[in-house]
Length: 174
Image 1 (spheres, rainbow, N blue to C red):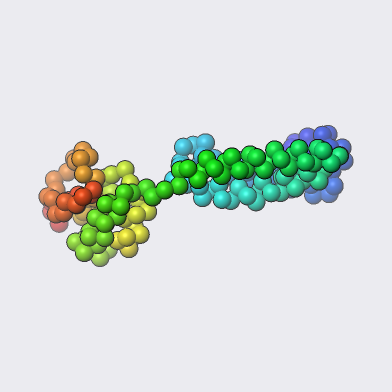
Image 2: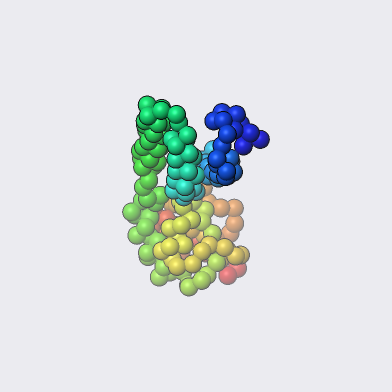
């Protein structure tokens, strides 16, 4: 269907152009899905992959334009769009945990036994505890990491560590 639209718009397409454009558009649509679904934590990873389908589509559009002015206009439009998106994404790139939280995680590495199951009850990226502690959260929780001032989880636990940004609780029964 998309291939037919390409043929109607540009006349007879070269062999493989319709398939290339169709697959690039599908890959591009899949790439922007995390952004549209509000999954900001994953959106930047997919934005990096957008370069491939966008490059293919841009090259095809520019090569099929009839005159030099149309080629320049298409190139300028695509370049401006990419630069605007890059600037917008660059504003959102920053650590998702304050420095004090990072220091607390470094200290927690000495408090939590290696590979002990824990959960994060806090609005920080799961990446940081996994990176600093050295193992991912999961399993039946023995420890709970939460932000200072956050509402405590609905379970019986005792305070093990109180840091500048994070609190560590040990679940009763362990």
